[in-house]
Image (tube, rainbow, N blue to C red):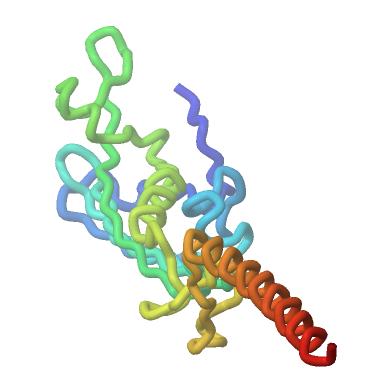
Length: 213
């Protein structure tokens, strides 16, 4: 069975050095570029920009079933504050662990996962010619480590709902809240006041005319 994995891919790792010896250990450190689509993070919210460096430290341990991979990924993530929409940048550490199983062959020469237990197979990804692709594991680990609602700071005041001004820059900013029902009454009162003044002005004029006569 030919492998579908490309050893030139920086996220593909070779386990042949372990030699299928239970207890054998191998440590690998590698800096790779973050892959592109699908997003290496939460689409439209926050994530590792495509091409940004991701530092990976791995511990590969050979066990009876396969190779247990434990690791940490470090990268800078970028996004947008959900409150004020300002850019957010932070360092991210994502931990992960995955079991990659040794392929065995049955009496017909077909490859099966070690142990040939269907339920166990669902939890393990088979090695392909002694290699494994870390990208799916790494992508899931990064997404789980990211904040679902990133903020630029914990006490971010957000934007004014009326005019959109950034309240972090104008903490005393506010708008006078006017009840539209009272506003209507104030308008009515103003119009009545004007009418009464006009009437009083007319009455005073009539009195003055009578006095002159």
